[in-house]
Length: 150
Image (cartoon, rainbow, N blue to C red; front, side, top):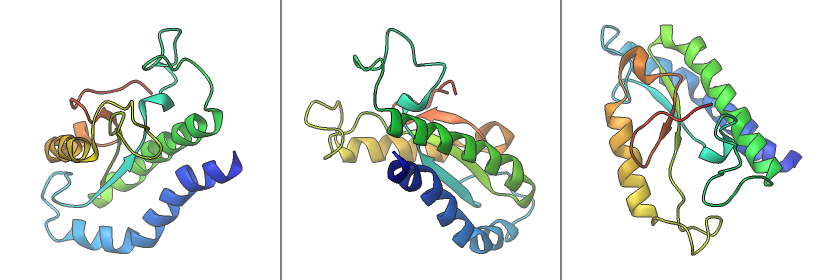
């Protein structure tokens, strides 16, 4: 469980820490521009399985419990994302989390609903619409751009 947390929560935080000077430099090119992916952005890939409010008896594609390490680590990533959005918005850096959908990968398995090309296309479309205060510090469903509950 500690290794999963290190990969899914600590890893992205350390990547942002390493790239922060470049993100700030990019954001400063046009300081009057709104927060957006065209200016400077941190997009953390999360999962709907990390949604505490969505963890109900209905579940997600039949998953109602389990996957403790994965779910907790991605919930931690969501908290890190909201903290980053608060800390970095005055620097002109957008920070948000996106659920890419249930994707056919080694981890997602063959029963997943979408392939990687579809997932990336949809996530990029959501990213293109993120702008201003409304776009930062949120948790989006990459399938349709709707907000997910924390």
